[in-house]
Image 1: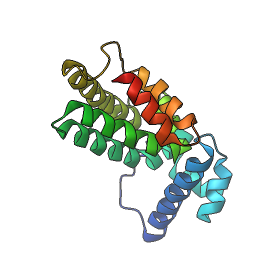
Image 2 (image 1 turned 90 degrees about the vertical axis):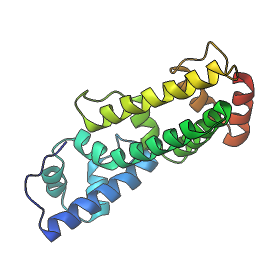
Image 3 (image 1 turned 60 degrees about the vertical axis):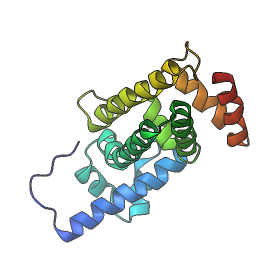
Length: 178
């Protein structure tokens, strides 16, 4: 991630914020491999400004999605706070599917591996630990199939989001998991 040692000038800060906002919009619609020149154009800055602020695509992806992974962390914590382990599992899955069906870039960030030292990968690993606790709680309570594994979330998310009515698709998947 880009390390900035001194506070940014007001115009540089505005440019950075515009780039991150534009990246979120473009990545949401087109995925994280979307053209960077489209992001610069949408932010109304030169491509050189983009590369000055974010030397690599990974730097921009991290700036765009680290807040989203922090939102996912909050969902996981809310799910873990549910007294009923099944309700916590369902809350996490429903909110995660909603985040993924509305944001192609987030789906791609969740399914890719990044540099282990990156903030993205650290956040993903911390969230995976919380996901494991959600699964373990539900399995220990006897409300989730005992053979469900973390990697099975990919199948759950793909199946639910593939349906025209993702809520109906998710309900079918959850019925099969209980």
